Length: 398
Length: 191
Image (cartoon, rainbow over all chains, first blue to last red; front, side):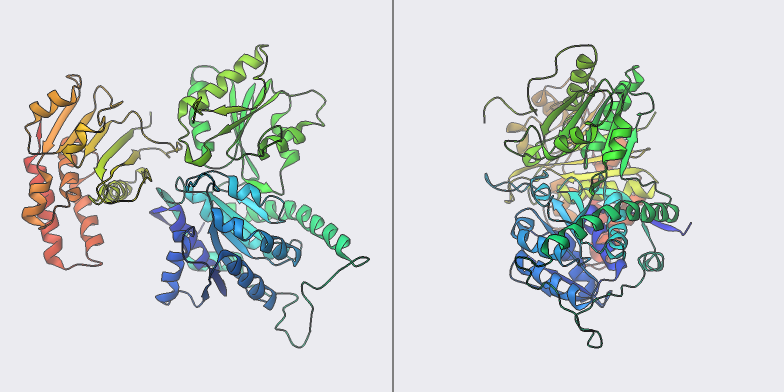
């Protein structure tokens, strides 16, 4: 295994390091709030000559993604980063990037969307990009943010995939906290991601191609969308292959879901992002007291790991799904509806309860997670599940 | 059992608490410890009360939340005692370290903590003015912290401090900072 360097650094800085090591040809970013220190750090690398990337500062997040799309269509390896309102402003461009099958890799610092104005962690921004056709990884830690960013590039550029990918990390909790992170050397990462050769570069004058053209009634629009679905389905195997290879290289395990204590668990919490650590910490303490509890962390959100979740949660007496985002009018948050869907085909029904937590950066105290496990124990013992969605830890009045 | 130490910092924005929280965490890495340091992001205006957190552990740190039951509380501005409950949730065998000219017994009475909690006082602002020539008490406070708790190694901290300072300053500034650390280490009193 290649030697690695251990650093005390933030999620943002180590994602910038991953980007530098992936050697993008072009990075385009809007350099002002709500942008992250990812692009600030990366701009420093460019200024100091530590990368020969073309770094383009633009006047909005919409333009940032437009520039990424243009550069990627031209045949370049393209990366960027955004957050919150910035991701929201990119919305239409996100769909164009995936529809044009451009393997752009973008980090997102998961943060709340206004109103009320709030800059703190939740998944309201990233869940809004759920249906935009991007492969999406979620990090629990700065380490995973680094690893996910590198893996995402290999997956995005894989000929069986050719889809853009997001490497999401929790705002402030992961982006701004100092954490212990291992990074690989430049040559190892360069070798792992390889060089990118676009199969349909606009700048290849010997082989002229058309990108993003008109496809009206009777055109191939419908069939294009089916191809996108096939590409996203194809990504499942590629994510696992790339993950296994990366795991071998880094010594850090990877799977699309990570399970803890699930061998004999009777109840479990399903969670995504940094709160998985809080859940595991609480589960560890409960286990020490003889409670058969488990944790399932979703690390790849798109394509969603339905089969893996069904296998992990099969036969449980009660399952809680924690969502850090709302889907008003739905039965629960985005993760809740997916998990319930994943369990529908099981022979025996698994009771699933939904919780909304931590919106706008509300602190995820360990006692809140304990409360969830207590609810699950009650349900497992025959009590009725909470009627409707629980707003975990919210005060009675604003 | 994992050895986890949780530190909560209270300061006014501009006093360097966030930097200190991070440098203490970075120093722990030198001893092959796991670490975490983060500010509680609030209003970004000079002088506003802020909090920051440091965790140091022998094992990987999984939790991502604020510290409600600290082992160590560090207060960079003693006027905060009147407006923030700095002792909130501190462990019975914990330490509260305060930048103040007031004697520890008087501060202890004001805090109203149980006898088992140690109260440590040092005039870090005075030391900073003498040595670094500016009232930035964060660096001497770490010297006092090390004396009162041994949470990180003194020489490792001074080494890291020099490394960080040398990016922008010369040896004179490094010496002044080292002097502030040594003086606070010597002068901190515990009651």
